[in-house]
Image (cartoon, rainbow, N blue to C red; front, side):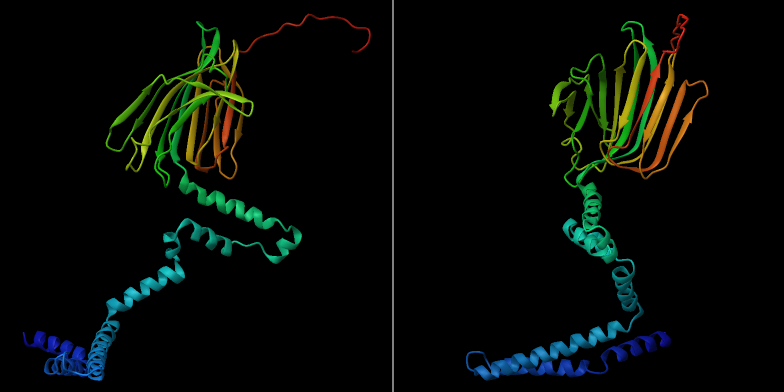
Length: 339
């Protein structure tokens, strides 16, 4: 008990030494002068004198308290943490507005004088990628994009069909979720169709669009059929949405070209296709820049898997050509001279 009292007394003694008593004394003097000299009778100079003593007393008390606090370990650790955030980690940059970030990046990422001498417009190259990087905040991005498809010959249509289920997690932009656009690169959609699009929120609520109707779009001569599904209101206030859609695309009587192209920044994707019946995988092409991908093609050419576990930008994609092998017999002829 006595030891605890000594510690408390020592703490109080440490706090109230130096200039604290001077500040308290000046504050009391200003209070006494203010009470003994009513504002209606005292002169203007006396009022200034009283207010000055009061301000000086308060300043001394506040300075003493701050000096005492600055000597504690907690205060020192707090200041140390702030300095580390600013000087070492530069965490303050994460909280500035987009325009401020752009200016900070431009100041940091500048071409050297040697680079400018070689190519004066190199600064525009840096600026282009700075703008592309910061634009991601205004876009809905996707993750865990998976495509599982099956290629087969549809005897009723007399064509090769590819039935695919697409699923991914969608995250909002700075303005919320963007509406979903689906379509086919055919003027009237052909025989291809979308069976459904389902959108689920983190609470398990789901909104479904059954057999969405496509309309023709002409963009500078590039005619396609598409539709836009409104999900902005459904996703209002949600941190993500899970999207799934089922699409059936038709090729010709013996071949079909399946394409996938990322129209939004995407955090990884996986494409898997299997072929039924006589359908085989004939050719494939992968367009991925700046990321690693993995390809697994079966020896019998009946299945293919392409996966990427990194961020990919718009324009990244792939195409797979499937067909039914046909044997073409060529009648032998004799020629006296080569043709």
